[in-house]
Image (tube, rainbow, N blue to C red):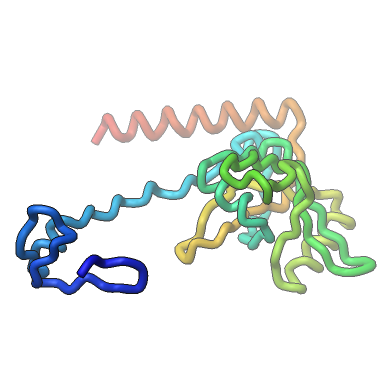
Length: 192
């Protein structure tokens, strides 16, 4: 009997549908199956410019509301956080949104394509949003996106930071301090 729609092949029985293969036991099926490929690790997108331009005061991991094609594009690594910024509003309703993050288009999602630079809602607890909104309004701080990555459960997370802008002289001091620490570490490692 030929296997068609809704008809299963019986394992261990001579099946004429398998031309010339003869008897097939369970080990034959297992040996004939292709092994699953290891998935490549999901990328971790980092905003290196933010660490240079801002003094980071406090970090917070938040979720982000995305469409399906956006998640696929992030998995492909088609994201730019460099121009992104976050706004926290307490009135008229609590809202934490991220602007200007460029998530490139995902070609196979032709009909359900997303807009690359749309405003996206961030997901955080009410108290955290209120705290960020008051810090931004009272102290003149800003909120910048630092990293975008996949959590262990496959959810996209965004690491944001409450930050204070650096002046040109502050940037040079930070670079000099970082270089000095690096040289000190190198000297200590050679010494041991």
